[in-house]
Length: 51
Image (cartoon, rainbow, N blue to C red; front, top):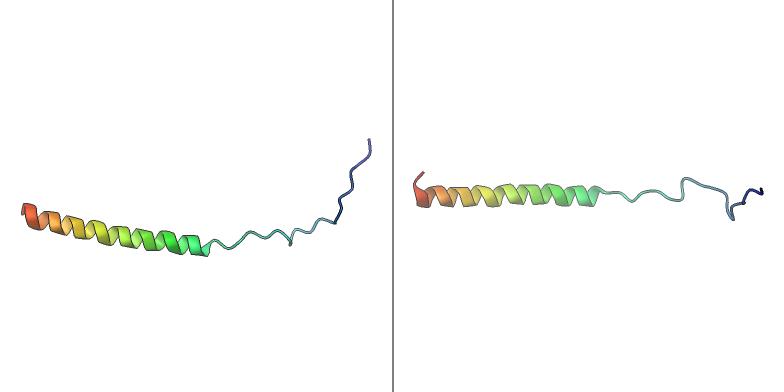
């Protein structure tokens, strides 16, 4: 059984994963905005319900 030869030598440096930092920044920003929105909603609810 013959071993198939690759057309080009394997170079692990060619396929580097893209940096995921924009995704992390987006998640962090969404978390902060989520906390601000929920904090505002709770403040409004407490003001109206007098809890």
